[in-house]
Length: 386
Image: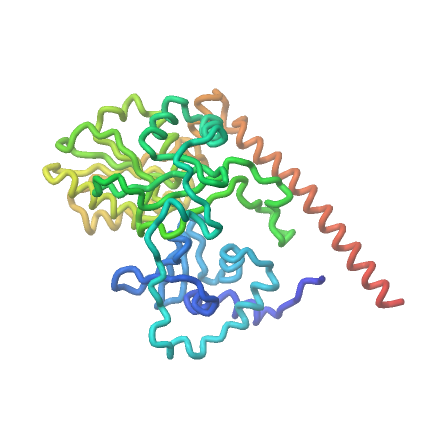
């Protein structure tokens, strides 16, 4: 079936769709954050919507924004083809939305380890061999893996995915308040190619998902606490694996200090502020708190640092801010660990070479698909003419 064509006027209208109203019209679960104008998606706690502007930002997706970009945003969220997405945005009917008595329902339920996803994935309570080998393959030592397993920071779900568990640092009950799921089996390239064959970007090689009903602004966090007297240091990262990788590279310096390592789930600054305030409560006698931002070495990482620096300066006079980016541009901390262990260079890093090979293989598959589509259209045209 040929892709439906749209006029430039229609596409412009679709791109500027009010994402808040659109998500409401599709029955998506949204929860108000505090008393402000922001709402959070019930299944993706890093997806925030500004009700005043109608713009949504998905922080765990490299802060994907719907601003003048509603088509791409909706395609990513609903995993629907281009033409269906555009038509859906154009069909948005906002009549009656404001007439509902309470259209913004509180839908979030308590986080549960026995209900991690809409498909019912649950925590098995142990780390299986596949997840162990995945972490080891990413450079995490057996010693570190076993320590994290013993502390119940990681385990395996019922579908074989790796679970990174989130805890509330102020709660001594050791209750898990959220989780991040990580697939450990690489997805075939055929399934990672986008339906828009002109888009050369591949989907993720490994499944990733924030669990259902994660506690707001929670994160994967662990510590090497010495005491609650000396000032603490909070290191923040974009993903759990990067926090573990940084620990692996620096554990000789970190063990025996008041260090806390946090995955903020993408570039979510609210998670950072929440944990800064939590450490203030845990260390009431500390003269200051040291905050070290460790995002990926990219432009968005630098922008994130500037954003946090501005907020810290205005709101926390006792927080000393530092940054520790990977020394190689465009690298994350797991790639830095890989380079250290394999003794390679940025140009010969095995994982980077693998990604390049995937891109080349995808290019071949993409061109074959285009050729088949062209042949099909030509055949259909010929039949109509005859």
